[in-house]
Length: 324
Image (cartoon, rainbow, N blue to C red; front, side, top):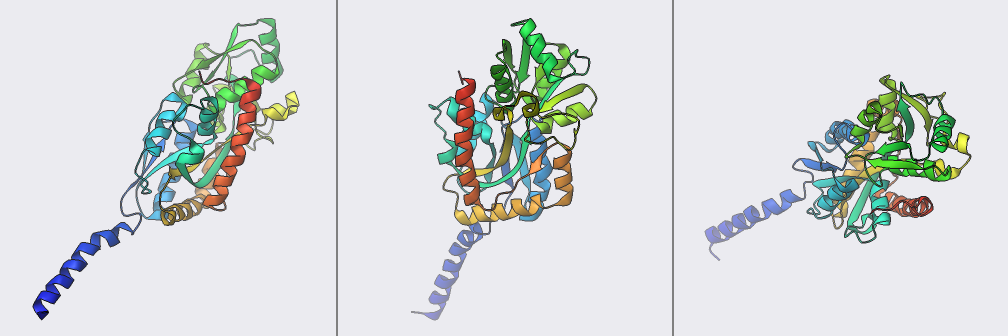
């Protein structure tokens, strides 16, 4: 073969192969993380807090996008149907598991349609009332609800959310006749209590702790196993009701669409692990009543999700919550 022709062919082959090689340099463009929670709500705030640290670890921009609706189903479906390339992720939680438990006919199954990357943090819920409420302790709410059946309401950010499940557990175990008022998002809980549309609520700590610290709301109990460091004088609900079903801590982690290459999952996992080790982020999370809980590996997170699915299925069955 003529030497000049050979060199031209060799140069052409190198040119063609360059883009394919560049594709493996993950991540080489911004990563989008989808939040199923309203902007300003606890999970959304925590996601935005970790994003700069994750971006620094991955040397890439992390974009947070809110897709609120259907109790998290809208965001879950969007990410599940996205390209499995590691550039579109979901802030996944036990809430998505609960949605599937309540609605088995949902086309998306978190245990099948996602590749777990890593858990990030857990958060109990906080039972709160407005600061001008006559209820000073949990027993006051129980007594008032029993004295006036059907006269009280509790709010949540939607059916199947942590606030809904905690409230339903409380109502069910105490045999109360109290109505659940599902709102469009957790950020609406505060206004509902202030207006008097609802009398109590169980927002997750990431939302509830800042509300109480703001001075307009009072914490009556927490659903964590132990008291929160932020509220050492506030009892756990289990201390009062003596029932382990009241111990409810939601968790939040990162999921990628199934079939995302394992090498990219591993890179994302390493980035999350590094981001969560930052002392400033740890302090910010803990100040809001959250506990950082990074997974040991993507496989460990997958195993944890499977065990959690069984636990929440039991809670849903016992409380009788329906997705209808």
